Each structure stands twice: as C-alpha cells, then as structure tokens.
Image 1: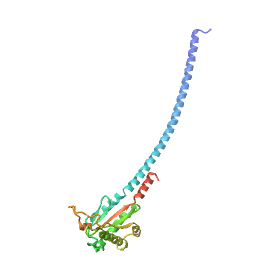
Image 2: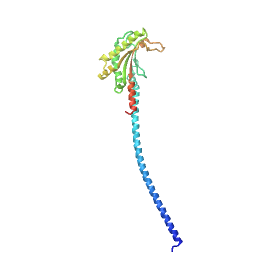
Image 3: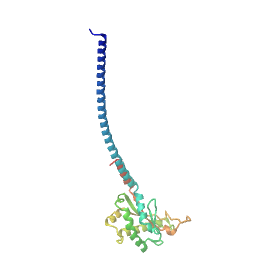
Image 4: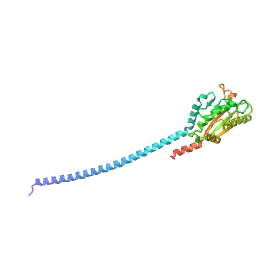
Length: 247
C-alpha cells in the first residue's frame, strides 16, 4: 500500500513534467519568433537597401536636371560675362549693358552727321569687332538659344521723326550689309551662314536719345549703332519643361 507521501511525490512529478512541456513550447515559439524576425529583418534590410539605391538615383537625376535648368536660365548671364571679358580693354569704344548684353558703340565711329555711309573708321572697327562678337554668340553652347542678332540704328533729335526713322534704318542696313558681304570680316562659313538667318536691321529714329550728366540730349552720342541679341524664350521654356518631365 502506498503512503500519502508517495501520492504527494507523484503529483509533484506530474507538475514538473507539465511545466517542462510548457517551457519547451515557449522555447519553440521563441525560436520560431526569432526566425521570423530574422527573416523579416533581412527582407526589410533588402527593401531598405533597394530604396536607398532608388533614392540615390532619384537625387542624381534631380541634380542633373537642376544643372540643365541652371544652364538654360543662365544663358544670357553667361553670354554677358563673356562679352564683358572679351571687350574689357575697349571700354572707350564699347559700352555693354550688364543686364541685357546690349552693346552701344561709341558715337561718331560709323557715320558723319546726317549721313548713312560707313566711315573708314567704322569699317575697320567692324572688321575687328564682329568676329569676336559672333564667336561668343554663335558658340555651340549658345547658338541653339539665339533667336535674333539685331543691328539697331539711332539718330539725334534734329529734324522730323519720319526723316530720322528713314536715316536710322539706312544706317542699320549699311552696317548689316557690310557685316554679311565684306570679306575682310573673317567669319567661318558656318557662322556666316547662320548669321544670314539671324541678323536683323532696325531703325529707331530718335526714340531713344542719349542724355548727358545734366539730363540734356547728347546729340553726338545719340547718333549711334547698337548690337543686341534676342533669346529663343519659347524654345527655352519647352526645353525646361522637358527636363522637369524627365525626358
């Protein structure tokens, strides 16, 4: 016959067996959890790595697009900087507008009063000036953005507006023809052909006279020729839109 103590010992044994089974289950669950966590961690790490690569590629693309946008929006600034550098030693003859790039040439160089025939001094000036000017504007990095190169004639305020309009137009045409037809102006054949499509001659009469320090009209300085360029604004906007669209 078993004593009560024997029953107590048997119950204790069963208790510890159940506890051990429970611990085994818990350990198994822990191992399973750690395995799943490790799998998820590796999967997340892989996804994170792929996301990092995609982010870096996106950032590189944005940097490239920004560089292209900066290049387009900075075209005029770049041209003006090159013009200023090229003609820095000719300030007594050439006045460059630092905002627009318009070039105002010294008065009296090209024409006598009430005349539109080019003076020898003006011809000699164009022979030196035009190749340098066109080399900058028709540079391959700028050429696609140049819509028009303009020769603009101006007169003093003596006489009627209509008379001076005709005179200023004849002056601008005289300069334009000399640039295109004179063989002493050494332009490359591609630049010469390109210039034929871009060059325009305008007469402004006395609509924009030059004033002296006292605010009075400087008749001599008002008789002048200006060189201007116009950019292809629409084409530049289209190019910028393509860049922003990632094309």
